[in-house]
Image 1 (cartoon, each protein chain N blue to C red):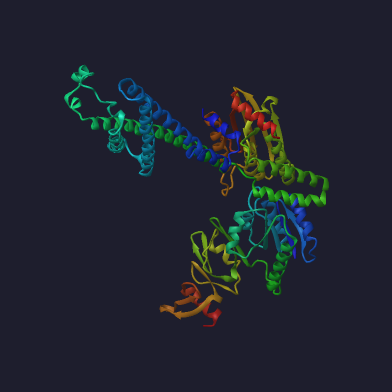
Image 2 (image 1 turned 90 degrees about the horizontal axis):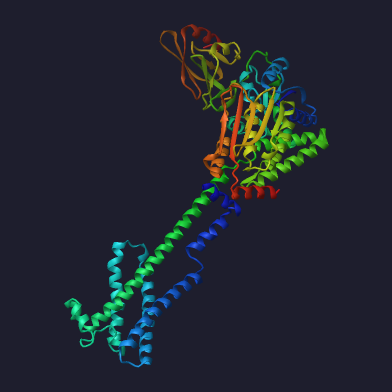
Length: 404
Length: 236
């Protein structure tokens, strides 16, 4: 459900910093946490291995227990030290980026070296014969073994044993880091996708048309001389509309009711300029008021209807806005008359195109915006926005209402 | 100076009227809200100065200029318009941004007034064209005809040779000929009208033909029929 992803994004403002923070934390991680996990694994792993050695040594070898514990501890602490060096070496040589085929022979060599060191060190210890087989005691077992193992000298035997331990260590280490890295990469990828989408949303969001802004200021200046009280109203409306556009940078969804307030301010200002030419007919179903819609969406559509429709007609016309709720979706319809022959300089609907794109990003394919120009003198814009009862959407819509 | 205000917004027209009340030399003789009305007013009143909005219903300010035979001096008034800015790159048309600053308006009025005084002394018969508004694709020019060295017929259109520019005018050469200043312009042949002030040299050709070299422009042949007239004019 892509919608949920986008809505989750809405919960915190998608600023550059807030998107970056989790990315870095995933990638590098709070160093203490990773280090702690590593050391826990090291101590636990070697501790268990050492314990099993100590257990079998105490059970089979005629060596005093203090001696056994001392030597086994010494061996396993050295193993920890050696793996620590091994880890540094692997990180330094970038083994995490190697393929399986490249990794395998390298790991064999890399585990054989410390394996030999410990195997040799054990030679001088009392527990040296830990893995050795006594011909007297283990005759049956010796019989079963293949000859090369039976005749293997004790040093090779110990080296092999320790090498195997180191090999398993390398395998575990590489396995764990690769899973962790892949997880981090996936997270980073999804963060990146979200960041891209939010940047895209920001780009698509329509700004207040500067032409409209300066014309309104001009109207206000004229009204200051002619009708100061209307001038005051106009300044309030302009301020409201500006505040709304500025805030639209922070939120993606608002209630239809809130958007209609801004559209009302916009229409009041436009009717200062257009006078009698602009007539508005609103028909909004009560239950539709609370539905969440993309901020500035209806505003863009209405602005388009006036710019390319009513403002182009010397006699003006009626702008009809209706909103109904049925089939679990909000249906908004904006109808306006337009000149039969559109002036060629118009590039109709780049604003509308962006609005449709924004709708798609926020709601997916279930939402839609279409401009119907089949009638030569009329234009109808139809918007469909799903009004799902999904908790995410309800939450955002409540939040949008709350922020007013 | 008689001025006409063309703007589709009544409030904007009244505001400009108020601003212009400060200038005793400017008399606002009327206003218009759209292109058709404006064209009629201009023909009737023949104002010296036009305050012209660019975006209007039923046609832009440029559409209005393209319709006019006599283009008065124009000061564009616009809120924010790339079309206008593009047009002014080529040309000396003045423009004001709305809301209009009184200082900028004063400067524009002074400029308009001095321009009208320049040529004001010798009152010319009103049939003679002084400026042509030309729109070619997305570019616009307000071409002073005195600066045009040659007019070349291209089918039903006329190519103007004006400095480095070669704007194409959407009407036939014959309709222009009657309206050109006869002191300046001379019909060289079927396709070309030349500006006599641009002549650099004249050569005699075979069979009584004349070759005229124009400053910054091409060589033009004067047809045999016109050569006699040309000699009389220039006393060659």
